[in-house]
Length: 250
Ligand code: IPE
Ligand code: IPE
Ligand code: MG
Image (tube, rainbow, N blue to C red; front, top):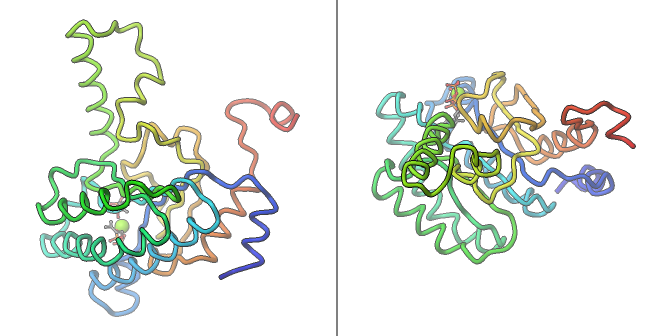
């Protein structure tokens, strides 16, 4: 528990309501510690547990974790199946803890293409936590932002073809409703660990005005203090949304 950093955040007041994290650097963490890549994913789970706990405790409303991208299927089969097994075992193990902490689990991405048992475990986790009212924990699983955008376009095209709507009715709000993130506000803060400076097909639409925090820290080393520091950094920024400084601070 890091009291003084937490107090500073509370005093500042403008907590990000939605934090999204690209949890990168597990493999390099493992390599640096002379361990197999999977050991990095295993250790990364400890960071997930800690970050979820802290977000819940300080009052963050939404936490979206990029857990497995659509492109990650291209990894060696051994690594993919190890990740899928870890996903299942972690959800099974942690669901009691999530409930205790009033966390509500959900997903974005195409979970239909996950292995049956992993998908089943996730659906159970969602069901068991569905009445919780604290932190919304959203796992991006088999997620591709471009696929999500195409899916939205297809759904809207179908509605136009069936006469349900006209093309001139397509607005940002209508479009957003066809995304996985319907009902979820856009992220205020995006954190990417692991030192890369790219989006990797994550939330392309939703990140339009999100503040970015990039850090070299590998995900398994990213813990409470790092999260709190990223929030303090965010709180010190001025979000202008196209306006000028004087308009925003007025
Ligand atoms: C992120 O860490 C975890 C997943 C993408 C599942 P990586 O496994 O990408 O770690 P690096 O980038 O190879 O270090
Ligand atoms: C992004 O990390 C995906 C997740 C964290 C799940 P990657 O390691 O897959 O990203 P790239 O391939 O380096 O862009
Ligand atoms: Mg990576």
